[in-house]
Length: 440
Figure 1 (tube, rainbow, N blue to C red):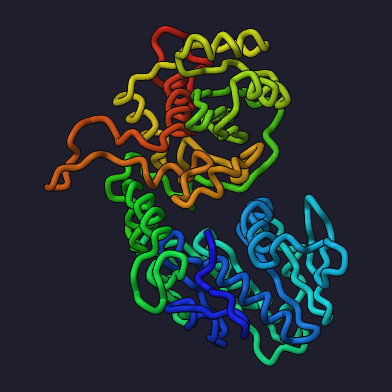
Figure 2 (cartoon, rainbow, N blue to C red; figure 1 turned 90 degrees about the horizontal axis):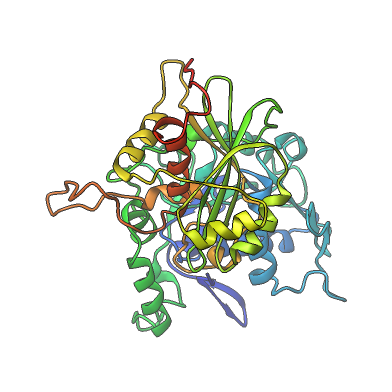
């Protein structure tokens, strides 16, 4: 993704909603819109400009988790905003830490601190003039409120304080749409000079290709990512709610039984998921390979580095790929690949039970390594299982009803592996269940 801000002799020129966002001094602002409108690059350029302008000011760049921040916005900040010049001789901006950066120092005494809401005590104990929240839709209302308290405006020489963010559209009941002090700015593809000529309004050749790619998305991802709509989960196969099913990381107890589920791929991602079972039969995905362009033999070495005793490794049926795993010491059993009954089993586990908990969870930041080709793909293809759910949908007729029992076959590699795992527990007939599932 490139900028909606064109570089001119006078600096950056934002367009449309990005322009209103850029010049706003309101205490709380967020820029929303479809994929590839330049929301993140706009926000990054703004906080960089403010810290450069106001001597001795203090900023914070933050996301739901620190790991997700350094794998996304930090990469864009260094590669797009500073053109990979940070750390080169004579470049005025300096960084503390390489693989785990802590902050950037500006020549005028300003500082940009990096953090995640998974360790708020490390960053929110300080005061800031400016706070930038990447992917603000991931935060809870209480977490956003905590950031507004940290933005005191007393940290440096800035004349105003501001919490700014970017976000992708989410469900209509999301707190972002209903927080009264917050001003929400809308960015559109037409405001991106890479996609549309800002003088003539005509679509560029590059824009035609990139928007055509976005048009190929499905389900909720299409409505949100292409058209910028805040819509619910209608048509999704699974009622996956990140606020319920996506949880913070924790140390898996050593006595929990562990399993693996594998879906083969090369052009499409190869997926290996590590699952743990708690004493009440709940399943937790705690580690994941989601990677394209590598052979099964290479993946085998990565799998073996994740130590532990695994009760079973359930895999897709490809005989050659299974043989490669077996040659490398990873024994697998064929998954039960029945689609309809498997989907029903997963849907049942996702339901919140009388104790207030579902029977299936995904831990945040489970990726062993991020697939850079997927991360940088203009269509924002999923790069982990939790990102697949919005696009995993039923085909529909003009009347909006499901046309058949099989979901649209697109970006379903992680959810397929998840289904294999659930079927091993709840639907297998040819293998004995690992143990009786006890529901609290």
